[in-house]
Amino acid sequence: MNQASLKRNELQQSLARLHTELASAPQLNDASRQLLREVLADIERVLGASPGQGSPEVIETAPHRLEELAVDFEARHPALAASVRQFIDLLGSMGL
Image (cartoon, rainbow, N blue to C red; front, side, top):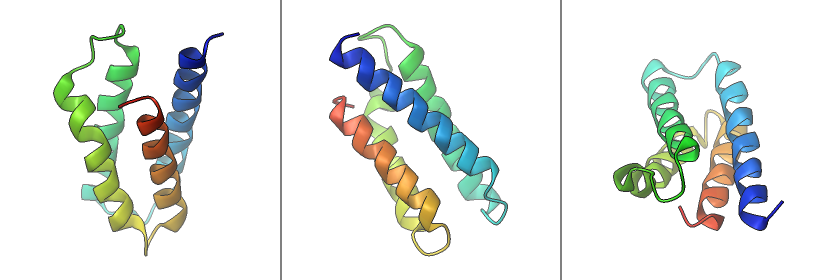
């Protein structure tokens, strides 16, 4: 398995963890929960696309939207914020 495949696999595992944490964060307000779901769905579409086929707008905006959520989650949901930041780092390491 090449480096890109390993990174993609790591990103998919991190995405699955984020979904699990999102489901177990009952105190998360509806707007934040919805925004996080939308961003994660966008990223899933990019991951499912063939190389070079991901929407440039999604690729460009998803990390910024996730960063905004991580900042918002810092005080109320530190574990979720840490997971979001880890995911952002993984996206960056893949050039996204």
